[in-house]
Image 1 (tube, rainbow, N blue to C red):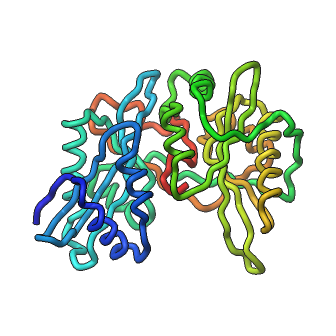
Image 2 (cartoon, rainbow, N blue to C red):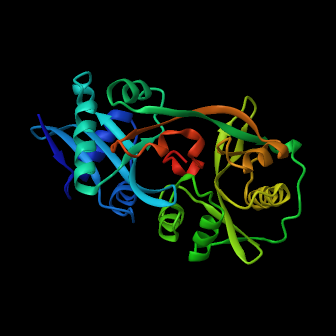
Image 3 (cartoon, rainbow, N blue to C red):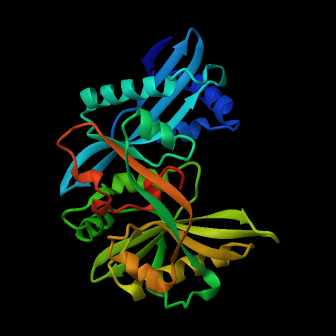
Length: 321
């Protein structure tokens, strides 16, 4: 069998393998958006071939991290898949080691990180030398018990601007590790995403333009289908009443659009984020689902991002949301 880099024209075989591996379709639009149109860097994908048969695929998505005030090129671990007829042959491990070596040497990628599911977590830790950073709980707010605030100063907008990036940087601690949320990154991640419809909420605070991004999803209870809201980005100052107003605006916006009952609002915050205790005060509590968060450093000197307390993360850092 042969390991190769992705080349233009491999897409049909990749999408065919995705259907075989997961018994569901991936649209070519989504694949091109995630892997070809990423504004940060070129595709980082390895394929395993047995003649004309695509036996395995592993892709990472380039992501800039801010680490101690400097920008570092890293990658988010993404789609791992093996043809059912080739299971148990170590294809994933072979592809991963080959890919990590290539992206370090060719692109100077300093780390691979991500959110393994329970099926792949063991392999990442045992076989690929990943380090567990955390098990991230979902912070959930039950809508019926939430005391709302005024939302009149919060607007829904269509696009991001450089002002949003400036506010993000001004709100960032100097020692933090965070995705570099540039205007280009935010536009690509949320405005151009072909799979999910995101809504951007903007609030002006002393001439700074802060923002939040949200989406909805349907889920089922024992009685009926209901709607939950994910706040995938929350870039606002540490002010409990401001956050209350923002959550209130998110709720009122979706309540006007939805026909199903909205039961909860969900988000991720690290416990060292000053906004965490603000969310706790508003009624957010730790709930399932719990998500593994891990990393593998590709450069020995880059250790600052191996400590969870240095991280500031959001749901939007994961491809699941």
